[in-house]
Image (cartoon, rainbow, N blue to C red):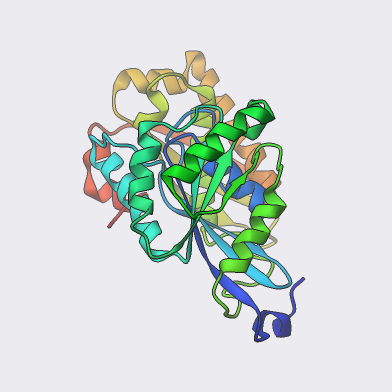
Length: 306
């Protein structure tokens, strides 16, 4: 554990690092790999991350505060999607370093090129992270590295596999060296600045992505309305409501005889117990809240206020 004196010594470095890129390039998987814990929810579907989420990695010579952001996409039709994109660009303006993620398996897309143009305007230090290198032959990296060198000249490119944690130590080292000198901002045992209530909401939403199909996950929101820790810290009681847009979606989330809702609750509870280190009593409700994606008050509750 980092001592108070280490965190304050003159050469210590500390700063904020934004992870940005288009949807589904592996930002949340990389955040978890760099922090060394599952603080961000992950699913195979794009736009899983909705709000900026902080993950903290404390080392003997630096504290790295990673900020996971929603995927940047051009067509943000709803107020929800507009706020997600706003959150990503706001993080770019407010951090010391930006990690621009590109999916090696899909190559450099027009969306990547559009984000790159925004990134070149930043005053912050930018590192390019070529993720998912485990999905292509090594020889296939050469043209991608060349393209990235042309797209963002004089920027360091670090190939990684977030899923397999390949080259993540090299990435941590590269980021540490460009952070500003300063004392640690978080206790050494703290992994995220998210409240336990918000983490619980995200764990339920993660299971919605895994257990439901097509458009349903994108039109759902989860709000924890009751969160109580018993005095002996051996039990958490959590009541959460899943908001959906339409009655048909409510029926899908509940499932035949409530089977799917029970499954969502079971897997979310197991994830919570592993993370919080205690027993969890989780009760889920489903409510039709038509138009919630364009309702400002709801978005504020979800942490998507400007």
